[in-house]
Length: 379
Image (cartoon, rainbow, N blue to C red; front, side, top):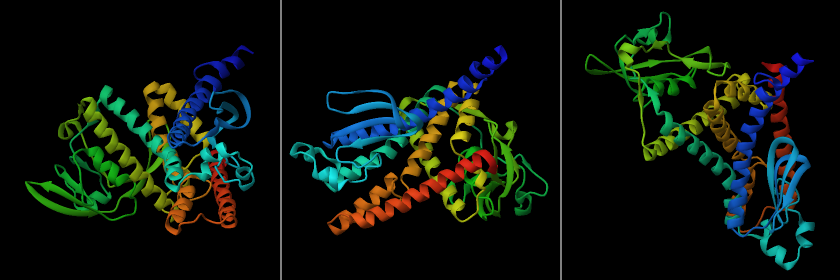
């Protein structure tokens, strides 16, 4: 019995070691996302009936003086803000409920607001996710700085794409596919997501520029959290003698600027991954759901709180991008409807909207089933 309890409640156990870190990560990301909707909606004069972390039955909560019910619900896999006049948690309009509203309620109902107010309120959720990532990175860069090394080639592995392309020890990277690089990490970042693509490299060799073309090959590596990931490599190695590894320290303004740049890089790389995934050029095992996130959260917590916070930042970007996909009932789907309304001068018909909502729900359920399958059986 003692061993059983220890396996649950110890820092390496299921509850403290996995479930608590998972709930911390997911709750932080969801809370910030929904708070974006809430704050901008309130700023636009829209009434809010409920703010929930989680779905399903309410566990506990309270109602504030504005009539908003703040609650924690039983299924901790998301959350929602329900505005006045919404049919459900996805802010789908309800003609019957709108018709039954009083004159004062209609003034603050979501679907009676101007198009720009509704669009801004919906967009705020993903934007707040990106801002959370920027804030986390800014603090991390301010406190810890950034470890960098010069973009030098110390070794070219035999039989690698780099050897076939003509790379030599002592080469210094200048650009990768037209993007200037300053560190070896920049080179790795630009290559890792491009397996199978021919990439043009500009290097400095003996004081002159040389242009080489190499196609990264897929290799498996284990990241800091113990996950096996497949990335593209060309087969060059950096070392301490040539790379001159060092830590760059940043002032708060510099850290903020670097955080914005780093967040932009993650967004671009995620978008690149999604495009390659759709056409079958990425491994399906790279996508995971709640089980994989919980596992990563537990591993990050064991490495230290700063690792857990970095996982929050990375997941926040992912949630922000996912919600911007043009699929109802995601935020991006709402924005498409508002864009059509702004262009045509009238809202999309209820029949068409209902049809797209049903199709969107089906796609979301398929995606959720896919990542759950990956979590449990697929990889």
